Image (cartoon, rainbow, N blue to C red; front, top):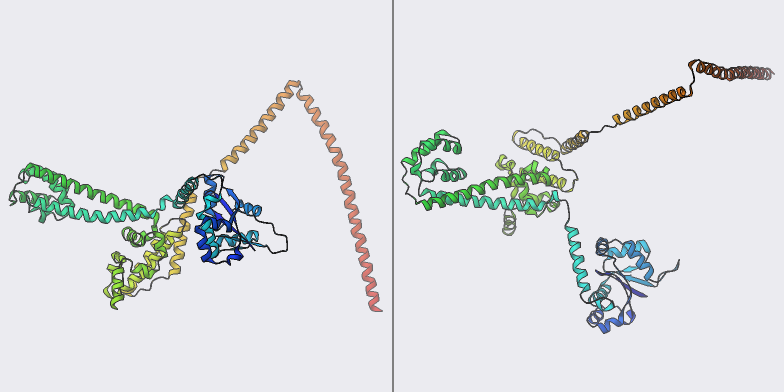
Length: 535
């Protein structure tokens, strides 16, 4: 049986015929040894046909189809023209070797061409790939590499493209940057406090907040110049007049050392940098909230934007988080503790990143594990809805949050929570109501158009009537002549109507006679039946 090999290159489809397979005995080691040497491999495998791609776009479409295990029309035509034809009712005396079993099964389903994919075939295709540029005569050196590079770039670019509004990578980067900004702002604020405390040590106890402290350090500068004139500015920063007065009094009796103008300028510039970082941190948090409402609205409504973003970043993507079971999601972020417990045969952790949720903190000590397990279950449901639903809505997340609240009440007060099926039905109804509201908001005015058409028809009729009148006037017909014509027409129309009335009367008479005849015949039949019964 002859063996043909299908090779999908970046420049086109190649069909190769393998000779002397019986002599080799389908020994993979022999083929592996002959692959390196072109003289030996060229005696076994020869080019049967080659079908180049028309353009780079055609190559990309063919590559996408092959990667998904689908046979295109171009490939089908190429195989039907290049392979030997099989008579009806007879088995083919050849087989087609392919690299991917999926496309082989699809080719067999569509064309009934027997396909095979095994180690022997893969070794032969490996040799074809190695010496492919030698088999094609008109192929210039470097053309195949260019085609492979271009196709690889376009294929990768097409695979990377997806919905821009639901890119979870932006959330992952934002939460990482938010965490680093928190650390940086805290460390820089501590540096400002230590630096300015040499000059004004009493300010730390009055204003413990880092952001306000940086603002005051920039505003006060030299404590010796602080007086009642700056009271309004201090009140605007602190928001409390008593604290502002306390700062002024503390500055008068401060024990700190004096700083040179250059040192004060450096402290002021550094305090400004810390303030800018704090402002950027607020903007980044708002950005994260907006992105989470687009990407995972239900997860954000259930557990919060920051905790939800941390779960997505730790899992790697929203799809990976949706694939995780609730038991994995529960201890996500506590892997070290888990493996330490497994190694030492101790107690495994009850929660990971999910611990930062407010629900776990509100639960009692004995119910924290239960609450973490229940919350992980609801987070898993919310992440799957966000990942695989086409429409973004927060109704499911809100209902799941209500369920968690009811579960907390059940642990504390013993109030029975509602069932999951009831909450899901209510959430689906809310989502459908939102869709209907969105549809009803769109304006539609079909009725005025119809009225316009009717009006236009009326206008046309009026216009035609006016034209008829004008024509009559143009013909010079008087009113009396018109009346005479109308009378003559009415008389003509009445004559056939009268004849029609007479014919209708005749038909009615005939029908009445027929009915009477039928009644008489039925009476005679009844009499006959009675007489026969008496006999």
